[in-house]
Image (cartoon, rainbow, N blue to C red; front, side, top):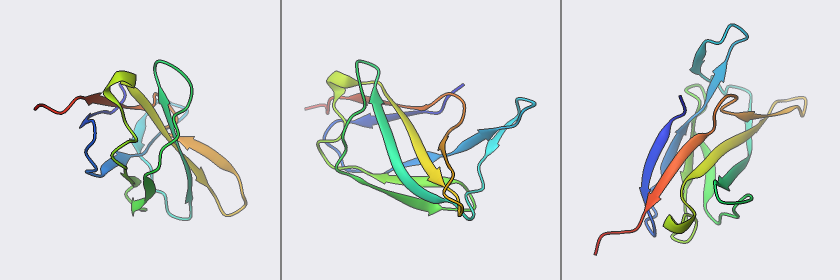
Length: 114
């Protein structure tokens, strides 16, 4: 089952993404990102193609496999919710891979309550 994160449209509170990997035996565990570089953040709305984001992303805990997405107020819209999120990592030899490597993390966005 994917990680599901709830967020509010217009807020800039960082979102921490726990990256996971699945072994060939089907066991899922937190990724150890030691030696890997965060190269890109792929955010896709379930209603269409990838979404451009202005926010920043970087390791929060490389050994713990946690990436922090510091979003801008315009990055995530309730009308396009739910978002599927994957992080592209690059190793020292230039090989790339998206994580989580199973189901994407989901971010559900709601409008702010007035």
